[in-house]
Length: 112
Length: 113
Image (cartoon, rainbow over all chains, first blue to last red; front, side, top):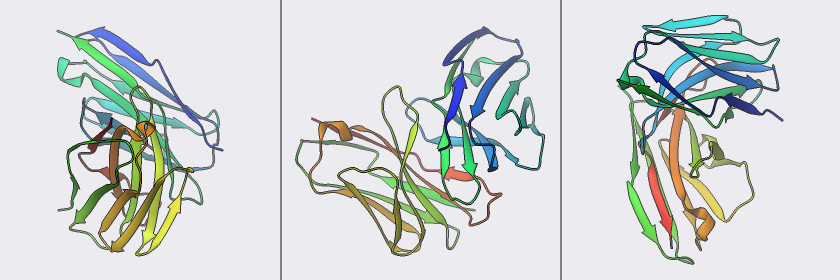
């Protein structure tokens, strides 16, 4: 059974700092792994999707990596801004299913 | 472009009352559809998913049910709400290819009193 864990649960950093969010999954047989952003009281917005055959994806200041063998993904945010403050969730889609298993998220606060 | 709608946005219901939450998708055909619940301080829990009209897969035992009467309509229901049903309910859709992302609706906040 796939389990997804995110560390840390919460993170507070000063503006301009580079930071890394971690996501671990127990079953390496995945189709893809996605990173989402959720603002308070809102739905989820997809940030990056990494296919199982890929090692990383980049979008602007965001870079996500995937290491299936170790069951890990990281989301790197460069030059953080107060507008980056949100909860970041990762989700793994297990091979052979339509199901996405989510981590509990990392609540990020970027201080101006 | 594709859009996903959920209503109502907020709902306060007494224990024991029925529930009906609706989700509709525009701009795509034959989507996979999903219902999630997000309880306070917890991650997203997959409740149901559907790969076609009338095809519903349930992920957790509960007093909720789901139906898909039309290709782009997904309904979450309950005959009698429990206090533990309170939470933030999110609908999502994805294209039926393994490499595609999920797109989420704005959510419905349900408070059962």
